[in-house]
Every structure is written in C-alpha cells, then in structure tokens.
Image (cartoon, rainbow, N blue to C red):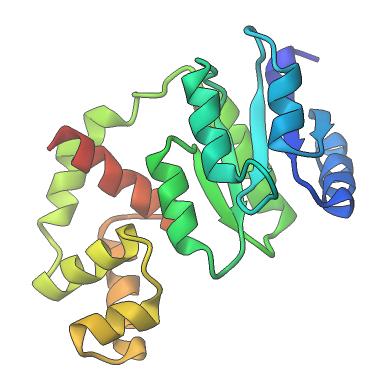
Length: 204
C-alpha cells in the first residue's frame, strides 16, 4: 500500500481512536493512532505523508492550535477536523486555519471515509479550487439580501438561533434561508459552503 493512503488519527479518547482505527483499516487505509496533538508533533518527520483526522476539542493542544503548529512547521498534510454539533464556530475557525474539511459528530462512517479519500486526492492541488472563484461569485450573486446575511452568519460560525436573533426572524425562517443558500451555492455540506466563501474572501 502506498504511504499516501496513510491516515493519522489524533484523539484523546482511547475508544474513539480504536473504533476509528478499526473502521479505517477495514476501508483499506494504513492507520496510525496518536493520543494527542503533542504526541503526533513529537514524532512527525519532515517527510510525513497522508492525512490527519483530529478532534477539535482536546486537552493541551486543541485541534485549532494543532493546525497552526502543523502549518508553522511546514507540514502540508490535509487535516479533517471532527466537531461536536455545538462547535460550528470552531469548525469554521479550523477551515480558516487551513483544515481540508470538518465533520460533525455523530457522523456516518461513509461520510468520513469519503472525506478522507477526497482530502488525499486533492492534497497536491491545495489551490486547485481557487480558479472557481468567478463561478462562486456568480452563485453568490443569485442570493437575496437576506440569504446573503444568513450566509455571512454561517461563515462566522454562528448557530441558527443566533442568526435568527440578530436578523429579527425565526429560527425556522433561518433554516429555510439556509437550505436555499445551500441549494443556490451547490454546496454539498456546511464545510463545502464555508470553503467556497473562504475562497472568495481570499481573492477579495
């Protein structure tokens, strides 16, 4: 098996590490388990390859700081961040720090496996999505003013209830606008939507 198919699982919960290790091994990935970001960084060599799956909330170095330290050391492995449902703001921050994707727990096994395969496939094309900025801007132009306000709230990591309060509308109305935004932007997930918004932001 190519080293490119190596997945590093970084999580302080031993049961999560074991279950993810088993899942990924059955999907034909080579797996390395790390009990903390500190442990990973202590053993990471300059030529380390593959992909990292990490929890965002960990004692010591959390997922956000982990991303920063990886980049500071010049490591360019794609990183997929696992977050709790209430951690959307952290997930958005992780994307801004360079995470390839984020997945909300609990997640379907296939969603994680697909995210890993996608991250591994695109790791040599880190900027390949950027030529899409004109296309993304075209989609943005189809949003109504209210939909754009909801999008801005989502990209800021705000939960639906907070967006609803800020805009003086009901959470249900926010959900409807959010669904319209996802559809008009052709976003397959919240992380995909955030990534597109960040690409346009970077080009601004």
